[in-house]
Amino acid sequence: VERRLPEISDADEQKALADYLFYNAVLPGSAEYSIHKFLNSNILAYKPLLHRIPKLRVKNVSFMYGATDWMDMSAGLSTQRLCESQRNNGGSPDVNVFMVRDAGHLLMLQNWHMTNAVLI
Image 1 (cartoon, rainbow, N blue to C red):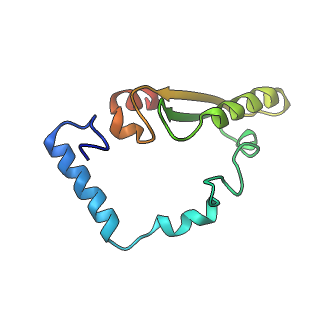
Image 2: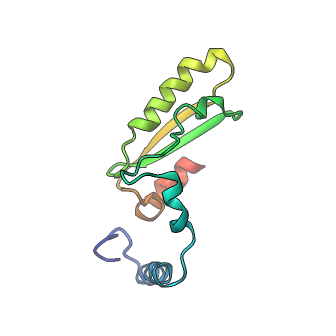
Image 3: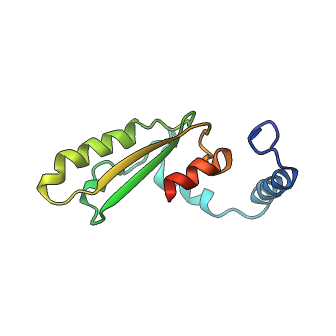
């Protein structure tokens, strides 16, 4: 935890996270058995959301990425542009794309202050 997430400096938080990661590794699996149903071996979705999001009957959709996230925020930006172009054709949602500074893929652990601010 100290090497992977140096942002977490509180000893109690480090211990809680270490315990969480340990028990996730040793207990029987759940979600990891189904992830191959959604993603191929290149970590690409079998059925990308890009063309489904404009059809959602919701007002807003938000994407959050860490500044050093392994996921490329270009997909969120492409979805935002697509929804903007289709908004006049029938109510595509308003799409917001946020970048959380000082965070990688684990936004809520690496910069929980900004993650919470974006969520609120």
